[in-house]
Length: 156
Image (cartoon, rainbow, N blue to C red):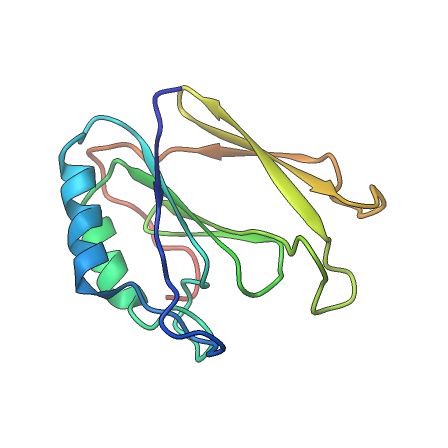
């Protein structure tokens, strides 16, 4: 559907909480994005991209690679067992919910259905029990333009 889906491995060490991508993967992402500058791309990575102790250790380096490559539209991540969305410099950040168990009361357990559109992606939360207030709700992500600057919204 005209979107490139890039999957990254953030596991640094088994049974350790934080993750890392490392120089080799960051270089690979840059090359992959540069090979198709007009094609929207999304990234999937396990560890959360926020610079906290349990997240990705090299978030700053990742964002340095991604910010100028405007074809990168969205990062999907997990690890926190939370269902959240925010944006950094026009890049959508989607924290996927847990698929097995929630860490906090009120968080959904389930998955997210993504449907590509020409200028974005429609997300729909599907909670396992169907009882979560956001179950079935759709969120429309609009892609940032390839040539314009982005407004920073979020915590980093």
